[in-house]
Image (cartoon, rainbow, N blue to C red; front, side):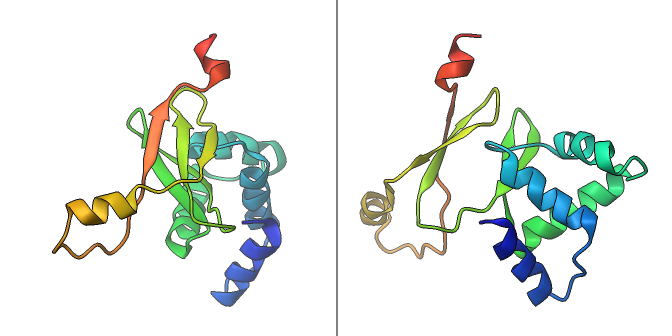
Amino acid sequence: MNQQEAVNMLKAHNFKITDKRLDIIRFFEEADGYRTAKDLNTYMESTHPNISFDTVYRNLHLYHEMGLLESTTLQGEKHFRLRCSHHHHHHFICSHCGGTKEIDMCPMEQLKKALAGYQINDHKFEIYGLCPSCQSV
């Protein structure tokens, strides 16, 4: 998802397009992988010194509910990233830096056979570990 797609989604849900909301989108557009609310708050404080953590957190969850952001939990803390929209894929997620790598295969065809008779409504497949950069730390 890019900034224009995110803005269009906000407009479609009748939300105002403010500098703060654009900066949140920009943060995630520039981020490589998943980031925490604290990461976003630190970024926002540089241009919006009076922003409250509640405002940041509320917008994070609004964007997540709207489908602008994906989330995962790393080390007991919720992390967010812009939703991928170009094709169906899954992610390897570095449990140290939050970086991601797309995985262009999906195990669902095999799993559907193993779950014959079950109704599957959705799925999310993530692999966690250390990226090459974090392995050397």
